[in-house]
Image 1 (cartoon, rainbow, N blue to C red):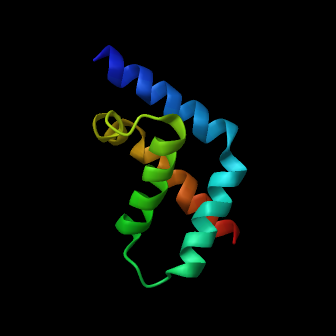
Image 2 (cartoon, rainbow, N blue to C red):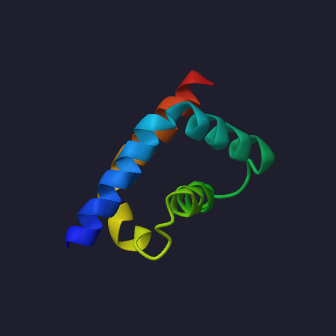
Image 3 (cartoon, one colour):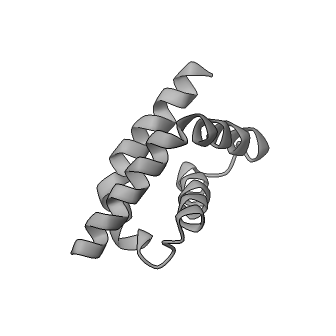
Length: 81
């Protein structure tokens, strides 16, 4: 459980620190593959975050706790575009 909490904190910190880059990534993915389901696009961003933080094996367990925050970021990004 401690490992999940640590990974969760890393993800939240990454989203906060790189919010503008993540927003750009979301918009770039949307522009490149607009007809792809949203869940597939979210998986691309999730994998980018996991690779950036080197938490590929832990992100599966931590993501459900951060997905709401991520979904809010996606919605805000799309509204602003």
